[in-house]
Length: 497
Ligand code: NAD
Image (cartoon, rainbow, N blue to C red):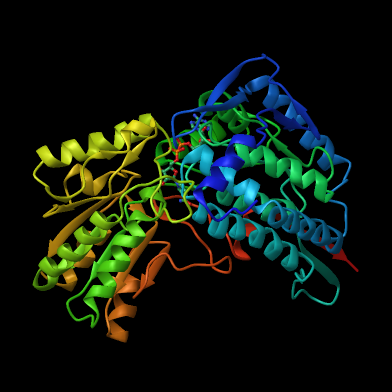
């Protein structure tokens, strides 16, 4: 089968097998209640399969399995080099199943197949490889005490880790949590988003095949308000690692406060500013990158540069370029390898995005491209890339996360106003600045309250650097060696010699 044409992907899609059951203690199980919900593809509105609707009783079973696995040390007690080899085998299996995983992801949440296959699956495999490679090279410490004592500072796994992830990068957000959690010896219960469950269960199956022992990596599908809440409230879960909306993050902190004060690590929403200064030498490159970064993954990206802050002297030129890119990037069949913009995750989300667009129009922003749905005849949920000009930073479209392909251009009079507008947001995930002046780049980067600042680029990243937000964009860091801090406790052992 040649997976390089739309026809061959469609053929594969017609024959692929879906698994929608819970994976608990190494076994595929229906939800204890027997309840299921439909897994609907945003590509064409088709029901792909039924998903087990896990709830509190399934979460209890999965947490008990994870705790038993942690207690008997079947994974935590293995040498780091053994965990390394097993996680490497997992990474290799992910690559071996590249086409299958990519297709499941695209059918489930609508992103273009080329992105799923070449970007997401590759990054997921690489994430497991990277933490596998790291884990047998980390040394621990001895404190500088008097000669009469020996004080060891060692790292231990937290124990049972609960991971709750969203639907925009279902596999990748899972990998960013599960890879460092497993590398450090924890047991995991994963609650995928109800909109995108398929790859989570498949990853769980591949982990077993790679040799990760039963009970160490469990997957319980279900809704946030039931399964997610039960996991976050569970008295025997040691930490909740979450990627999702700021509203849900707030609830998770409340749940922890009311239960066992478990650690809560949050990667939340964003409304990231991207500043183009007139002094930058290649305005076209800056504008093209701004638009492409915004429309990437249909705009369903937490760090999307949705507020484009531009000096007035170049504002007209920038708007023409970003509007032209928006017009060129029409949504198309996600199963066609040439497609760059696919479907939004579901019809309700497309309605939500259209609501933001309608209110921005009546609220005084100027629509210069897009603003409509597309491909309605397919039954899928497609929204055309949209650009608003003359947005003011107090408008709803500049303050709230749309999580769709909608770019707002905010004209400003100079650097100071640009930085002030950039920081005037409850969020602080990403930020961009385009300037040829080295010292200006450093100065502005220091002033921007964001976890990641891009200079003369946007969205460039790999696994080596931490990712997370300031302010209401969260409190933890995914990726890099710093993520290992999140999944471990520091222990002091003081020995009188
Ligand atoms: P969401 O918060 O609605 O859902 C995320 C997950 O939380 C899902 O698995 C959901 O079932 C679960 N959930 C919902 N309510 C819950 C509750 N009461 N208790 C426990 N779990 C609950 O977010 P979403 O709409 O699925 O995802 C989009 C959001 O994710 C956006 O805000 C986006 O910015 C954010 N996001 C952030 C990052 C980051 O790294 N900062 C990355 C990707 C997405």
